[in-house]
Image 1 (tube, rainbow, N blue to C red):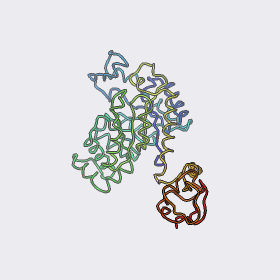
Image 2: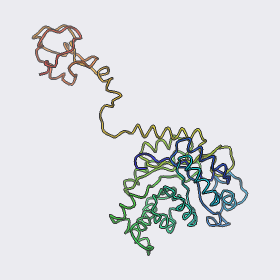
Image 3: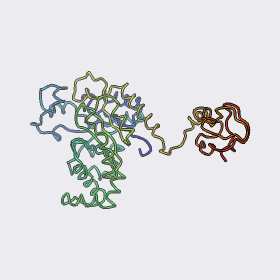
Image 4: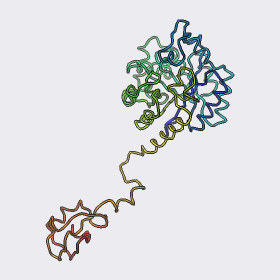
Length: 362
């Protein structure tokens, strides 16, 4: 993951509770070229109370009937389904991932050998989950939607404690001390990627705040990425150019399907277009060394100029502004030597447009 952007195709709950659709989504993610396809692992009873209402976007997409618990219960995947999906991922050469929303789910994902664990934005403040996830030893993608910088710092503190200290912290002070230590900050930097995120579905591009990635990288010394909820592929592609090491994007088999997240998701052809765009941006970033590329070197003599005689010149005549100019191609003395030539005597005779010899500047 360190050598290129890790692209996570977020299936989430867009399977609508159908294992067959979940398996089809694995196929779509693999065909699009994503590195991983990610689902969500939860039991409604462990996640929400009966009084938990739906968010406005969930009401818009699923109607007013019932609360979160009723909606989520229909979207659960059994342990057997997880194994089937993980098997399909292996067969298709795409990594299986999921977000655990309870400790039982976390243990299941650890047993399934996921390449990384995702901490969702809503659980950034759930200290015991952060501690348990970090102690699996797996890389963590920590999403930061709805959070300010101090909340991110506290979460990283819990992770630093988990990675460098035994037992449980006695309070946030222990976590802050763990992250402030050289050992703790280094452990977090090696294990954690912090994701900028806007928790709204869909999120307006104006709320994406991609520069927060740069701020968090500078503040915490960690790799950063982007979990995208905007429409289309433009913002996620921009995140790639700004240095995201992980990019996560929701996708669906069809935006016309009912369900909480379909409307803010990419369809299969759009997911493939996003992967292509990210890979193209990744290639375009280069190594940062300013030097001519191999592709442009043949154009240098064609596009650049040489010093040439602006009028016929006899040997011994003085080069003046009226006697010398610069024209294409670059097959003679560089125009940067203009001032070395000006005022000197011509060493031989020249016709109009003859390129000046290098000796004219010595």
